[in-house]
Length: 234
Image (cartoon, rainbow, N blue to C red; front, side):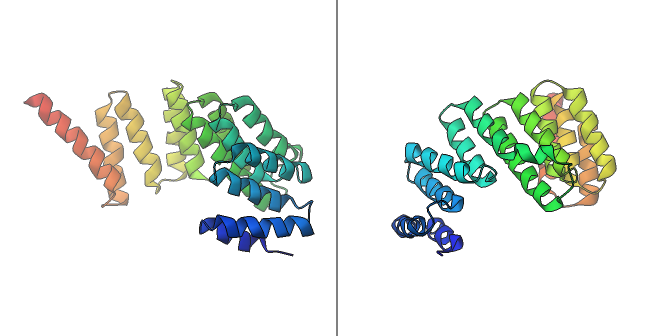
């Protein structure tokens, strides 16, 4: 059996002909191995062979409908070519079984699917499809509620939808749960600043410096407020 790690190493080193040769040999030995089809689909996506890539990724999901890496990769490609609804359906079909079981039955699997929902949420966010992004972030949070970054990104998506009060409320709750996390306070300050509440924003960023005196983001945002205040006075 040819190691998938060996193939991945060749892809990462951009030794595409070597990776392709290994994949051809591997698929001759194990023609039903979903991992090999996924890796060939990934390789072909890097080579710009999108039609062939989509075909290989679909084969991977045919052999293993729960192959989350193949589902996410296929979703990314379909989104990139504008087939948004199809992209969403592909991923939902791949992880539907996770939500049929009780969340928490297998923490390791839950975390893995949480990461994939987070990635898909970020993909929708990048294409300004904020409703879908929020939906994916919600699923990710359900599976891994301790992941602060997901909850911060959901707040950003809510703000983009115009739900500023809800976003601020969520971040304030998260600040109570994680008082030592500067990321939450940075984002809360940005939301206040976007609403013209410079004083509240300044308080949040000052509190970041109490936790992390050299936090570059907080220093930069505080300098921005001071610069704008100086400009107005002059």
